[in-house]
Structures are given as structure tokens and as C-alpha cells.
Amino acid sequence: MTDFDKVYTRRNTNSVKWDTINQTYNEENLLPMWVADMDFKVNEPVLKALKETIDHGILGYIETPNSLYDAIQNWQKRHHNYSIEKEAILFNSGVVPSISLAIQAYTSVGDAVMIHDPVYPPFATVVQKNRRKLIRTTLIEENGHFVMNYDEIERLIRSESVKLFVLCNPHNPGGRVWHQTELEMLGNLCAKYNVIVVSDEIHQDLIFSPNVFTTFANAHPTFKDFSITLTAATKTFNLAGIKNSMVFIENPDLREKFSSVQQINQQHEINTFGYIGTEAAYVHGDQWLDDLLKYLTKNITLVSKFLASELPNVKMMKPEGTYLIWLDFSTFNLTDQQIQNRLIHEGKVVLNPGISFGPAGTQHMRLNVACSKEVLVDGLNRIKRAFQDFA
Ligand SMILES: Cc1ncc(COP(=O)(O)O)c(C=O)c1O
Image 1 (cartoon, rainbow, N blue to C red):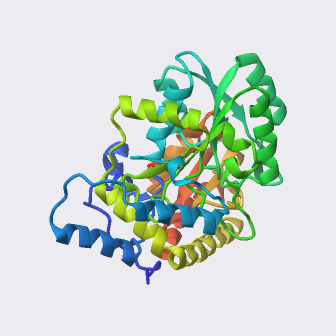
Image 2: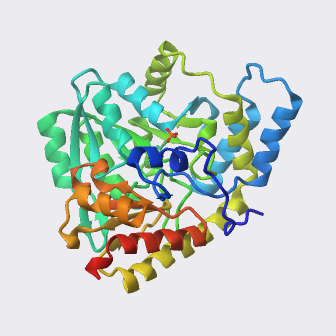
Image 3: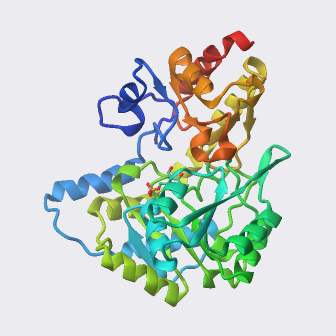
């Protein structure tokens, strides 16, 4: 069983989260609480499957095993009540590359693509790098969590002739697990104006009870006709480095278009360890995921209590899913750069600047709590130190 309390050394492993920050910020002894990977050791059966592959000693080309399709179909049915046919499952090296392929498959240069503001930064990057017009619709904060602005979405879809919506479901950085009714409202608008929905569901397994995750394609019987689903085992099981993700496309026409762009770019051959790790995680991961969610729930409660007693001016958005917490520093009346400088140079702690998630992220920071309690407490004390003169 994984000991989530155990602190592992990740320095000097070429970890993006741990090993790039000193140079980026020109500062020593920084504690990373940013990039969305976890400081927990991977589930033992996954490591065993990877080791067996190494021990066999030959790493030639491999085909996609049928047992992997079974594992994915069973996981989707068991955890998300989503029945997906084998023929509708494609693979790619990552969810972000698949967003890019979808943009290329379903839109042309100059077309408008809509995303939420704030949202996971690569959404905007990929839209812009593909030379599509980026349209942001701002999420509204209501009763401590984000809700969508349907009036604005409809207005922008019409005025900008939006062709595609990249949805983050559940939402990073706000931790919203969109309700089926919310997805229905968004989907009805997209259907009305022929907008294709690319639903990034990489955080779909990281859901805190009693919240219930709904796959966009499953939110209404017709939504599978104009949407594609991107997901992976890599976020849930801390396997980001093995580079494997899935694309579920039920509409044969949309599947053909996606597949064709993938073939043009010769991106359809997947890393062996991606296949092996994904299958082992989905076959053996139920208990590990249960344990992880319990641990993360405790960490989130710890943050909430700490902020209430030690840093009451920093407001947190309580996540319904994901291990990411959206923190609001606006009461300090500091600029984004001032907030960042304090965290880096006084607190010596690295969070993701909210402004990188879009203009609506100003004066916010995203905190990653997928670490041991000991590291989390250290991180929170560092954040407190950065703002101690405001106490
Ligand atoms: C919403 C979201 N999508 C995609 C990714 C990255 O996916 P991949 O590594 O498969 O490209 C992340 C990682 O943090 C994420 O939060």
C-alpha cells in the first residue's frame, strides 16, 4: 500500500516540478507546490507491470493490446457509467497534444475557439499556436465556486462565430465538477450553433464525494454526436512521464477527421510504457484511488483550517475535484508580480500564478496539495511567511 505520508526526494531526478525552479526564479531552497503532478509513489502493481516489461529486456514496437481496451472500457463503465465502444477509442501521447489535433481537425486558421477564463494555460497556448482566434468566456464566482456565464457564451458564440469549445471538465484551476445540468446547458448552446466540444476530462477520477462527475458526451444522449472526450490514467495515478492518453470519439465522422490529422502527423504510435502503465493502473487502481482521495480530502481540510486561523485574508475555492486549490490574494491589493515576488523570495514557495490561467486569474494563485501532510504544512507556513506583515 502506498504510504501517502512518506516524503520522497524528487530533487535531482530531472523533475519539472522540483528541478527547474531554482534556475527559473534564481532563488535557493524553494518548495514546489505548482505543476500538477503528485509527490506520491506510484501504485505497486503499476510499477510491477513496468518492471516486468523491462525485465523481459526487449522493447521493440508494440501493438495496442486488447486487454488495454478492456481495461479502459471497464474503468469508464465502473467509475463513470460511460459505455464506450472499442472502435471509438484512440490513443495519443497526451491530452494537450490531442487538443491541438482536434483544433487542426475541426477548425481552420482564423476560426474562433472558445475557452473559459480562468483555465489551464495550455488551452490558450494551443489555440494561439494553431493561429485560431482565442475567445475567453469568464467564469463567475458564485457562493464560493465558479459557474458558467451562459448569456455571455451565447453572445460570443454568435458574434465571433465560434467553431469549437475546449471544456475543462472537471475544471482546473477552480476544482469545479460540472453538474450534468450545467453541461446540458452548455451543450444545448453548442448544439444550437454547431460548436464542437472538446472535453478535457483528465481530472475525471479525482472527485470528492458527494460530487458526481459526468462525462460531457454522456450528459445528454445527443452530445456524443458533436463532442470528443480526452482523458488519461496519468493524472489519476501520477504517471505523467509515461505519456499516454485516450481520445473517445463516438461520431464516426469526427473520429475519421481526428484520425486523419493524427496520421498526417504520424502521432498514432504510443510509448510502450504508456500502454503498460495505463492498463495496470485501470485494472489494479481502485483501492489506491480510494486511499488517495481520502488523503487529498484531509489535505484540503488542512488548508482550509490553516487559512481560516493563520491567513484569513487569503480565500480558497474549495475544490469538488482535482488536487488543486484556487487561492484569492486580492484583499492584499498587491499586483500579480508583487504577490509572486513575496511567495518566491520571502516565502520560498512556488505556486502557479493565477494570471497565467487568463486575465480573470489576476491576484490569484493555484496551490497543488498532492503531497505529504508534512510538506503541505511546510508549504502553508511558507505562504504565511510571505505575507506576515499583513497579519
Ligand atoms: C486540465 C489538464 N489537461 C491536460 C493536462 C496535461 O495532460 P497531458 O500531460 O496528457 O498533455 C493537465 C495537466 O496538468 C491538465 O490539468
